[in-house]
Length: 395
Image 1 (spheres, rainbow, N blue to C red):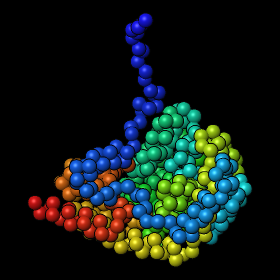
Image 2: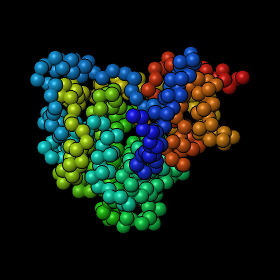
Image 3: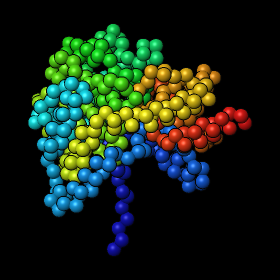
């Protein structure tokens, strides 16, 4: 017997309605459709390194993947050898001493770490300080956790640094977590010891957990700095780091966080209920990457330095202005006053020059007069992009 019943409408959780699909997820679909029509779009948008990890990393992965005993579930805290390698890496390059047993937690990428940290410290209604402009995931994860977001302004006028007087005027008794990201994405502003000292003083004064997201400190940056270099920072602070940018391992999902043992324990409670650890051969290969000497980083940066010159030429062709002192994988430039906004410029470049750049509005309202060019395309493709833009400008 066929019974016809009216189905009750199913709706997603409110948290899903509060966020949008990630900008790059949406835009890459559009670009794929254009490429399917033969447009051959050159992407200067996403900061995903296009080059290989070191030979030692690849060979270790292959050798370890052939061993039958390396394919089972692993510890939620990673293998001890990996935690020790991260500890040695921090000691060598940042001068920071970390106990590999209880002050380091490997992550399946720092993006996932944003979720783990937020869920470990934030209850619904708690306040979170998010930079504007800043990495969009700080906002989306805060919304998923039903936090109240307090944006703090970063502007070219203040050197893309926090205005501590402005921050003191916020309802700080409600705020439990603050996101920092230096070297800063998207603006390329380098970290300074003075910034980190002021941030630690502010966080301690108000009982705020301070998190520095630090994946860019080895890219076009002469002196890598860590928030944890500041005396007493570990009492109140967490630092995330990643091999995605510094070791060309974005798809490997090899990240970590470091803090005091109590913070690490709380975050592990969340993490261990969400993921099941990492692939052992990948962890063993990552150890080889962390053992890289200065020559490795120099070689990576020499390539990015060449590409950066072309990116600056593109900015000049677009009549955009930029700070030559930026570090990281991008060039951040202010668009001309006669252009309506960053999305307008980016869409024009996409559809007329067949070049994809990132509009700054996706990072917050303070980014709307800016675009971002990624250095993660070959120099040859960047030169072709420049030529396409020049041809478009002459039409």
